[in-house]
Length: 123
Image 1 (spheres, rainbow, N blue to C red):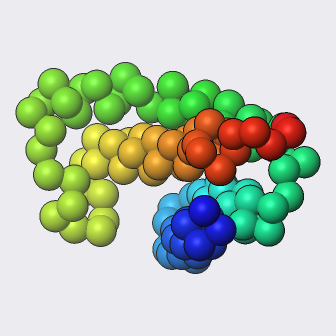
Image 2 (cartoon, rainbow, N blue to C red):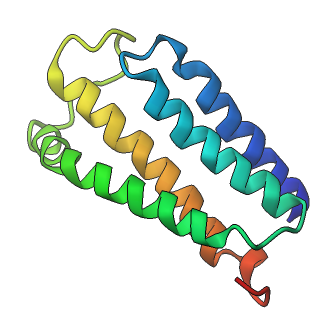
């Protein structure tokens, strides 16, 4: 699991690194960098940070909850492409991308909390 945790640490660090050209880069960089740090700590065998993972998960889910209606509208529109251009020409493009990014961060937190690497270790 150590290798998998390092791979996810690098992946989320890359997610954080490419946020420089986002309209709101700071909050996204912090979100993804936090998850990257959690995976690095897991790779190092440190488990005393679990309360922070719970906080990150709650933050991501709450934020995604605010975007869920826009995501639902996008689905009702027939899920038109959101990858045609990096520039979000229509509001649903940015909201949907943000919702999906938050879902990825939340899934990363859930895996850290409940995945095989966390079983049997104190939290």
